[in-house]
Image (cartoon, rainbow, N blue to C red; front, side, top):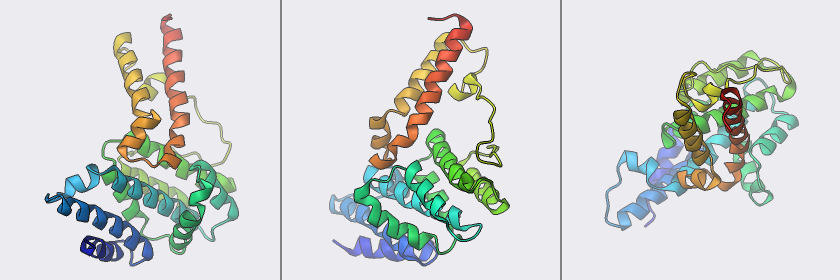
Length: 249
């Protein structure tokens, strides 16, 4: 059956600023519809984003590529440093470079339409604030690659943060600007007066959520799983800091 792909492609083309990236995303969604119908089931809008990890992988990849390229373009011509930062932060494998490069080049032509991709990512990973926060921080690092955060870049990041449900995120203005050490309790999402047992439970939950197998099961493409490495380090460092503070072994 190919009608789902065709319809999905046309919908994507209409929604995503009439460009080829919309066709790609729409066709992926349409393919999922075809498979679901072939099994004799009627897909729901909620299931469309949650039931199939393959669809979520495609949405994650397409959204990240678009957001990175459009952020690089928002304050003027895209520089080689910005492209290299994207490749480094998201660990693009050589085998995928050509295809991802084509999508990136298409996206960087026009910075408009980025909100659609941010919303698609938020809808595909509802409640995954840590994962979305890692994507946001990677975008922040791309914005800082030229040494400073420009007003258009700040507006872009703040809007994406709002769509992700991460209102109030603080973005440093310059590359290399020292940041305040993160509060260990805030990293683990617990109150300072929480019982040690509860804090340990929160630490264990976060480490499970950031395990590569867990992320891939949620639909995060393998090439992007490395984004969680720094977060895992901060989670473990926070737990170690609290243990030392409380005299726990």
